[in-house]
Image 1 (cartoon, rainbow, N blue to C red):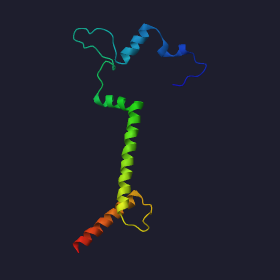
Image 2: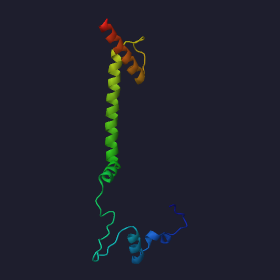
Image 3: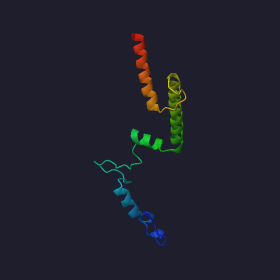
Image 4: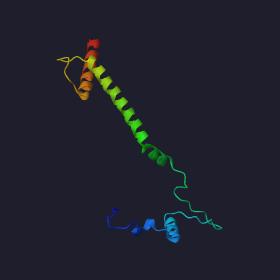
Length: 123
């Protein structure tokens, strides 16, 4: 909700200090502070209920520390992936030898080269 500069804070419903209004707002949100009567169970606030495993995971992943650690792990994983491609590239014969190949070209060339070596061994 955007506030205009001329709108006073007193106009906002959440700033009302009337206890009856606040209690009604809590009840409509599913929260009550009344003691349970006979045959009724006490309604709980969402904050009183334990978080589900999925909600805990979402909250943990939303922290800056988690995102930073995840980014670091991902950077290390990608770097290892690129090193593996570079090592595979060194083993493949191409003309010219220093020709830049994409990852898919490296994989396709490796498949062809392995097939060629299998053919040589079979003959």
